Structure formats: C-alpha cells, structure tokens
Image 1 (spheres, rainbow, N blue to C red):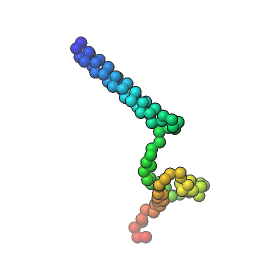
Image 2: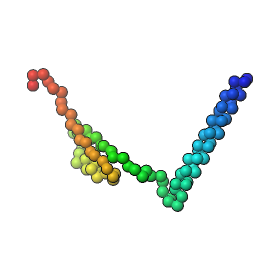
Image 3: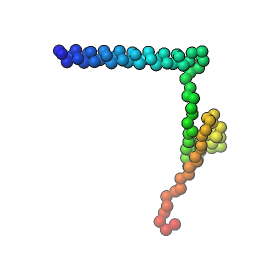
Image 4: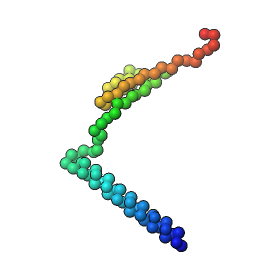
Length: 91
C-alpha cells in the first residue's frame, strides 16, 4: 500500500507542475500579445532552401515553378535537380 501512495503523490505533483506550465505559457502569450491583437510571429526568419526535383512529365510545370519563385519569404534559394539515367556499360 505504501507504493500506491508514493506513485499517487508523484502523479499529483506532476499534475501540479503541468498546471503551472499551462499558466506560465498562457500568461506569456497574453503578455506578448497585449495591445497587438496578433498571433505570435517569429522576429527572425532563417534562410531556406527549396529543392525541386525535375523528372518526367509535370502538368503546368511553368505555373508550378513560378509559384516557387514568387514566395513571400525574406530569403530563400531554389535548387532544381535533374536525375541522369543509369549508366550502361559500353555506352
């Protein structure tokens, strides 16, 4: 019976800690958004790479590639990759 009370108290302490985490996160969000009326948004956008494999037939290829180039992101690069077919011996 002693082991039951040990685990029950351990569980209760965990739930209390979880409650404190929820309160802390909610207060941080409300403090950050006070008067802004906006959701949280990062102040730093890291540069990204978009890898577009080109192989086979792609319907509306021009429109698809244009959508990659017209992104609304501060800094990005687009890498187009091609696959060369398997090399046959003697060719």
